[in-house]
Image 1: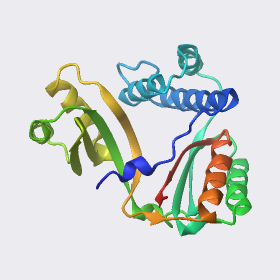
Image 2: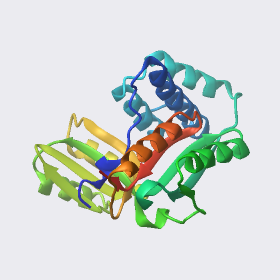
Image 3: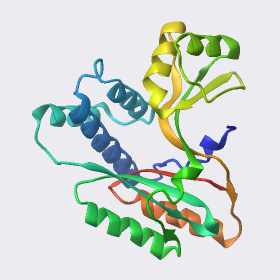
Image 4: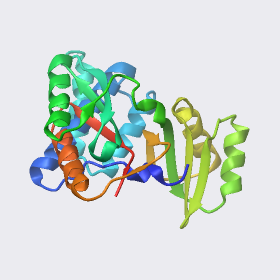
Length: 238
């Protein structure tokens, strides 16, 4: 599978305003996850992983707690997931995951990002078949065989394991996320996950260059500026 998952464009807080947007996106995702599966991280493994990831990304604790309190209250907005696919500059493939309380507005906003950068939004499934929906768990270590044995003993369907520069990265189907994480926690006491999430990993990459690079960066900035956009996945390499 290689290191293709690293091509994913992260939401980098370049300004205080951008950091606020990142915090807001985490707050929304935590709220939705807690409302769906319960606000107790011990009983909601998805929520626990999400909170851990938020802390690694330096989301303030008051943002996390506010989202949990909101979910405990039972009221609030009714968000639903929305996924859009299409082709970006240089004909690279793009998947945009959103949480929206107004699907018509969200679709219009995302479509504008495609249109403004001369990109083409596609129909559902137009590019997602060229990505693997993977659970990715990365942690410090060098004993690849011990990790594989622990996962196999727990009957985890492993897609790939990489060991490089003192770090082991496990790739598994997204449906195996909880089983894989629990197996590793039980097998390796005190394990600390540097990466703990589910992503769309491209099966192939598309190299872009020249004017397409600047246009692609603008395209990503426009998407990341939208409050409804949670994650952007792509196969561009430059």
